[in-house]
Every structure is written in C-alpha cells, then in structure tokens.
Length: 261
Image (cartoon, rainbow, N blue to C red; front, side, top):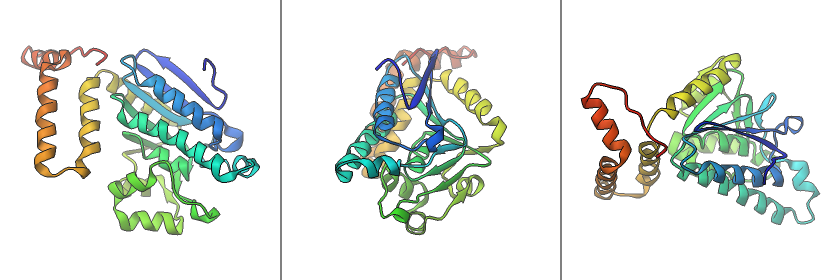
C-alpha cells in the first residue's frame, strides 16, 4: 500500500508519525482504518524507526468504532471481528517493536480510541482531551486491549468503574489515575510530542525494546523467572554495539551515539 486513505504516515529520519485522518467522522475506526493502522505499524517495525508518534486530526483523537460502518455490514458480527482483528494486529505490533510509541491525545478518546491511546509507551494528552470507554452504552464490549492494559494501569475496581458506568475522565483526571503521563496545553501538544520524539530518537532502540519486553512479561512471571530474563537481556545488551557505545561513552565522559538498534 503506497497511499493511505484514512490515516497519514510520515517518516522523518528515525521518527514515524501516524495520524488518524477521518476528522469528519471523529476519526472513527472502520475496516479501512484498522487495516491501514496494521500496515503502518508493520512498516514502523524496522531498524529505520526508533519512535512512533500517534495522534488524531481535528478535534477528536478517536471516537471509537464507526457505528455507521458497523451497521451497514451484511454481517455485523463478522465485520466487527475483522475490524477488531486488524486493530489488535496493529496494537500488538506497536507493543512488541523496539520503537517507543508516543500517543499524543489531542481530543476525545472513546471506546477503541481510549484503548489505543493508553496502549502507548508514553502517553501525552492535551488539556481538552477526555477519555471514556462508552462500549456498554451501545450494547458492545471492550476491545483494543482495554481489558489487558487498564487493569494493569489502574487496577480492576477502577477499570470496572470506567467500563460499566462509562464515566468520562478529563485529561487531568486521567493523569491522576495513572492513564496519562503528561498533560500539556492544547497548543503545545504537537510541540511537546515532537520534543519527546527527538529525545527518544537519541536513545538506544535495543534498550528501549528490552524495557518494553520485560514489562510486558512481568505480570506472567514469578520473581526468579523475571530476574533470569533480566540477566539474559542485560548480558545481551552489554555485548551489543549500543551497549558497548553507552558504557564507553560514559567512561569517556561524552554523549553516546547510538545506532538504529
């Protein structure tokens, strides 16, 4: 796919920028958008990319699934399953890649938009952003990894509150709950996301990928198993080009120059 219809994709050096681009439909996810997200995520999973910035065009980050699209399908269940599968493929790829994923939440994040927003490694939100699950309001259930990420971020009780009551959190409330890492003024969101992306682009992709992998495994492992993974990974990093460069630079009192991996 050389051109995207529902998202925009831009690569500048080692930084990729993905923008959900259906502003007239509140960036609602239809079959085309989730397919394109999966393709874009796969494109970012390469040594050429160290940072992915994901945001939305217009007033919304993403209002969730496009219900008009769902209702028009001959088989709603089959169609929604395909949309969810493609979204999950995108989120899984973003989670497993070495690149740091920055979600810059520029407006309302509802349903699958909420799920996608908190799937970022670093989550930024504009002051006017808001977060709501909204699934049960229309008789549906959560997807996009929400039932995986939210309990780990905020616990089961607060997750149930969000999913069952569809409570809307402001950006500041989302930050206080631990869903958002940083809240910035609306007109500073893009600037701050770019600053953070440039900062992460100067770091070691392999080290960042190691952090992501260790944290992904931690809830399924016992202490000894997790420590064994830590020991094996830090040993591998010590042998890597970035590991050697980082240690040598520290000892030489200079800034390290890390490569693509």
